[in-house]
Image (cartoon, rainbow, N blue to C red):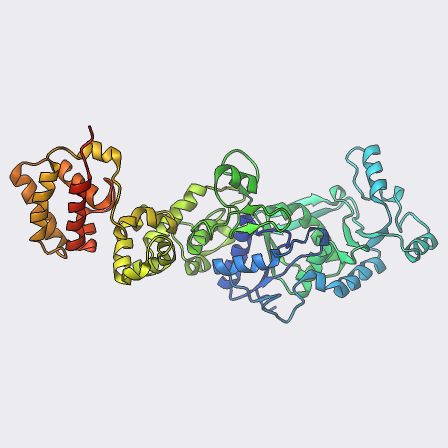
Length: 510
């Protein structure tokens, strides 16, 4: 028998922004598909019309594109197994609902929400199943004539799956091994709602996975309880031989305490839980995203990949190509992964550190333009400036506070540094320093530094006081990258002009 072609699907609901846990699910699907030269499908599961949110589908597509998670078949990409939006597949689902009804695998139920609520009050832990279904209003308990009359009269109804009790159902999971549950604990799930003329997740999911020839269902752990029901549905349709392999991924857990990562955790601790910014179209509430917060997509992908999976060694930095080559369910954890948002920052810092200086400078220019006239500075100048400070930043937005002195001379001087470093004799020292610097070739950083150090040592001056006073005049405060790296970039004229301005404007603290 020929090996089955790998076809996976990421199937989000357009009910709001894509949660970072969903992004990880999409990423793992993508890695597995690419590793096996398979197909990545994006299917929009919009059968719950009451929860549809405008803009959510576009958001999903934009987020995946930003992260480099490529889609082979989908609403936008097309394909041979469409439509790829469930609300456009009504006619398909009706046929399969009828097939289950005709085979006696499902039945029609007329119970109103009020009647169901009353049963829940009467029976503790009420469940619509083999033990209770005959006491309810459905096509199993009512005469056929009455059922037909109710349907013809326009009575609202749902179609429920008929779960036979007392059977052990085994789900074969590529991470968790065999998971067995007795069918007696399963309820007769609603598969179709006449009011919407749409199936529920349980039916649409099975039909679409089968028709789209999905080979592996890779989804979150929260769907594991429904997997036995899905196994029974595959069997009910006679599709057991083409049932996909199941993979239920570990949950992403909140950074502190117990439980699943939520938006509230992000709001409370100050980190995004969505890939992109999102504004709720109803409330106007804005939620931050990783892209707008300044994260590089490569860093986010690397960080997410290691939440619940490891490459089998101590490597932490993995490109998309590395992840595609090394990904394996054998190294996926069964337990949840704590979401360490400080680690996400660290990854972003490291990726910025290893980013090409010229590329980083180009990304910085729009931010720089918010403060100065960028046309005054060459690309080479901006690149050189960025290169000296990028080891100090976690995000692109951190470049301006760390590099602003390259683009504007200080007009104010840090008061604390003035008190500590600017003494009565400092102007005299700085005047002498100007004479030393005037004689140097600033392109020769080591030579300039050596000349200044020789002058300091030869005169018995306090090195810390002299060098910090020099930095104060040039930067405006006593911090920053190497002093002579700064002076090389600023050039002799600007460096000396700033020292002179400092001599004129800085006064010793009383």
